[in-house]
Length: 436
Image (cartoon, rainbow, N blue to C red; front, side):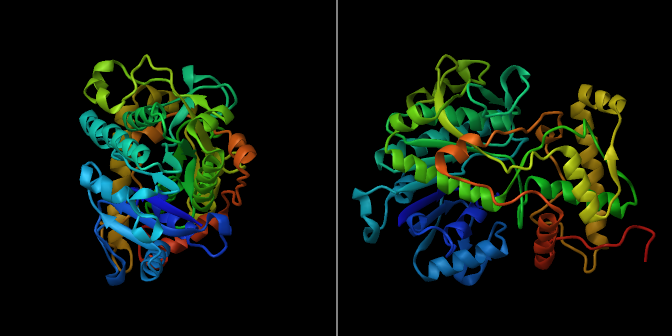
């Protein structure tokens, strides 16, 4: 059995799906945790069912059961402070105390607001990651697994899959670039047994990112009696992964790194280059003492891509949304897509304004009316509305760790997602306008 530390991610999908997976009776005994600690900023009191962030039904049940059995502990705190980091990384005496490090650490920290200014990303993503990495080295953790965003493509816009042998990939967008720089800084740290896991677009019950916002856009268009038309080519790769398979990939990655035993052994077994995204080293000069990587540093790390074997494209997503939501769907022609590509900023703003206005009307027309402070939304960030492929090679993850995806994106899986949110009262049910 293993000890597990999970940092951040409760408000997103990663932590909420990893915890129930770790506590599942079906998990292999060698991977089953004896103790799990979660550290995040939200107030969480499982016994009182009190949460200041969205925690889905399945994760609430896992938190409540785990805390009652004393196998799960939740700490609220700011990991940018040294006392909180020390508390987070120190095991309880019953599990080894200060003399022993956690077997597995999963790091889901970092700013997730696509519109946050650069200074916020530097502080909450890069600086925080470097501080956490130093704590991990100090406490001699077994494996340190950090999640990457989905927004990666091959450098110089080469054709092919991210993660293919010998190919370098780089992120697009401000938010993803700072998460990438955080990964580069961690990869430079001696003594840190690091693995990076890059998930494709998520789907499955209670996922608030990935496919869910697209399905909600379908609900808006159905409510307005309009056809949902996608930009770009229907063949544009938008690879996907079920949240259960993503959690499994994280666990397999941690177990693999521990089995090899050291940073050197991990890098010798599998690595890819992490090219710099910095426009100037001045952007990270203030964090040099913490180990921030510069543009000149040649950095490599073990990176695994978590994607199912479905080779999902925009056409597949459009077809499933039409089938499950009941909205007509199609694709804009090349002329409109070309215009959008040249004016992407304006297009994104107009599209999200339309979707959110229709969303508000849809929520109010539902029976009973739904409050607007719900965990899901049809808003899609500009980084995901652009004409960029999400095309991942999962071969290394399968070959080296033994991981196998169980799911593919199907109508039944999407219906399960809809029904899960509907059961919580978080999915609209209004009839289309003009229908009684």
